[in-house]
Length: 335
Image (cartoon, rainbow, N blue to C red; front, side, top):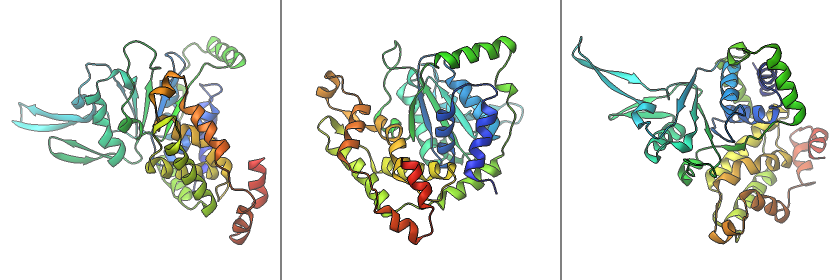
């Protein structure tokens, strides 16, 4: 049985053959994969968003497909359609690129809302309906969407229902000076270096096995209450019109379980929740007009809420001792 910690370390090592300095992003992708989640990357073109998705899929043994979400892409270009075969006189189903383990929707915010909505059923139900026929998608199934910053021309913000389907929204920035120098050295030595140089190091069976381990991670009542209080605080914040949904709270708990498992723990600590709260919650918040005009960001709201909602502390210790948890490791992770 492959443990989540071993799965993550193995994938990270292989991804690092091509990419430099992407450890936090690979960790979030692994957490999403282990919790049946989807990820939204935002960043300017040319910083490796699509390449990261491609090499992650190759290292994980996942069937990879890519959809370039331009304004002229139709829903059938995503899901597929029935094609008439003159030779047989019958209609055959031609599946679209959504029928893969890992689907990259590149520059999703350049596509029309109708085309974006074609992904909603796939992301939530793991099924696709084509001309009245409902078909299941491969397992595991994961969508990684990339988008350009909304300040750029020719893009628009995703609707709330679409954003709520993504477990994480991750801002992909420029590498540090040292990382960029390392990238230049690497491609100077091997100009053709790319995703094809990444080998499969785990299989789908390993992913499914690691998922089972995540479900066994323990979440204390105090941690669940902390998640509920954080979500409720977003709904009551004066700068927020629409706060975090119940789906967001469930996602935060499940993601914290996966993060704990990646760190070889069988229980969640508050630091797991705090680390993941921003990528889970921020993109789901709809700010008020006054907040927008005041240049308040969802990240600002999350940071303020951290100061308002007290994280559980010593009350966790008796609970973990009772179930045989490694309290010393929990304390170390919170320091």
